[in-house]
Image (cartoon, rainbow over all chains, first blue to last red):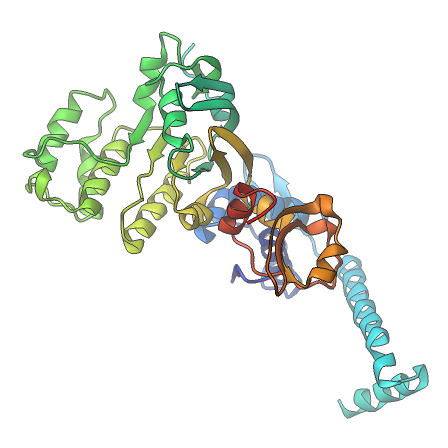
Length: 124
Length: 288
């Protein structure tokens, strides 16, 4: 699994770790029941803070992507399809909102946006 | 009770020490076991004094210090010292002794001295066994001191300016050693340095000492998250809640400021922030 920490990213480090592990789970690179590196190992390998790594794991656990077995470690949880769907829907909504925010600057009406979308969609 | 593997490797509470012209004033911090803490501050800020107070090499006036679960003015503290590896800014070994001699001396000094570990470090650090100490370069001297500190199975490493005066490549190697040392969660490191970028690379916690006072003691990544560096126009700057501004530098052409991230409007572009910026702005207070 690749985890790349960028210092120039506007995202805090724990979010970078969290989102990259999440992507590996969603894409199927990490499968249900796969063990994750221990918090300390991952932190030391990436040369980042242990506290930050723990925070990333905590967030992943809270969101249901991984689970912890006491004294053993963290494992990938059963993939929750509705969770992933929910998350992607939020993403799509976000993109739509930014379209709506930019549209007035080019004088685009709702109808024109929908027409544009249809044209692009059919191209694909 | 000696071996109480407490959650904190070091605990300092309300530490005070006065000298004629300088004082350590109410310094408090803790170093959770398994982490690395950096102590930053300019020359004469009180970093070395704090370290001496932690080792009880200097007697405190008031406050509490616990190291690896033992009060450092208790009688048992000399036993705890076996578990502490210490490296000062200069390595003091007699000029004519070799690394092999160092091994013989330390064998009789520390109960837990591990000769094979020591020779292991000598080869990792590419240190000659038979060369006399006065012919060592500064980097080699420092590495020898670090090898000694690591070879008696310490649980806590305390380093005072151990990486200053070394080139970036050796510094990076040494930081890697500290990083690996803390793979064991019962191992902790306290290091003072004014090379802030080194501390930024490996520390979990950062304490900033300024004129004998602890200006902040924080988790490093939280600091970087909490604050933002902005460069903006005077007019835009005046829109920001002044309570959130932690430091500013106003020129004729605009304003550079350290502000709490949460007080900023979302669309405002922030600059890349490093620990050094935070320290510079906070040290100079309102104006830089």
